[in-house]
Length: 171
Image (cartoon, rainbow, N blue to C red; front, side, top):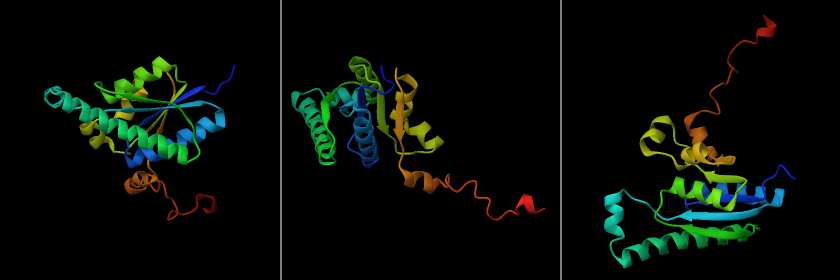
């Protein structure tokens, strides 16, 4: 028995913030000898828009093709970085957060790795956040990889800079 996961699920969406998550997942999979699974979930819309989009076979195929291209590109980038993808999964017709959690359960993932845009509280509340939902509902640990520049932009890395205060040890 080992404390390390045997299966890691990388949730990818083709965005720049998912790139760092992919590199993190590759490093984790290699250092723990885990099998790396990658999932891309096709775009989802509100029900009315989704039904209009998928009303025709051509609409359904366009969504599936778009998601497959993102998945193929992600697998290619992982392999170029020296990683190995055990299985690439394409999920359609389900909310992204639910599809990720369901697949993690189905493959018995020991860890999920997902990127985040690093949105602040109000923007996250208004726009929703797939990573937050996955963290709340997943059966296993989740690593959320946030971009460094978003933390710097918000000033959270400099918030406790006390360099201008007198040293209390000298008082």
